[in-house]
Image (tube, rainbow, N blue to C red; front, side):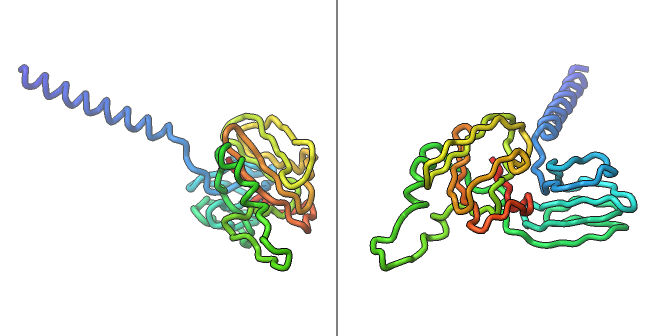
Length: 227
């Protein structure tokens, strides 16, 4: 009898551990695969500037429109109608039409610690020793370039973002943002073409440059800066 009770107790303990492990696994955040750049009101379950994960299904009906920007592949899809299943680098579309193009994007660029960001100016603005040489800085030393002056900022949770210009004098921009992507261009933020900026969130920072030919309009994926 005691052996039977012990066996039952052992099975119960294993079941409890398995259940606990399953709950912990389900509690882990699922990495996003793509950013919803635009979506018709007729599509249910997603909104503009939501992240979607692999396996997410979106019904567009006959003429609903969806624009997805894939973080890993930098593929931007414009989909009209049908059923969409989100993949890792592109979608599977059934009963609809899809157009794809590749845009310049960084997905999740390197974040700098406060100590690193304090030193980054020396890397970004390093000048050649002679005025007769115009050798560019190594690619690793250059800030990321976004094509328009209104970046899309994605914070992991609500917090304060500070954008400071580091190659010229300008008042910093301080914003309290939600924990989801926000198009700062739609909030009236216009950074100077050719300017180099440091976006800081807590102890992390990202240095980026606005393209010299910035027009103010471009793909949200190309302007996305994730923390």
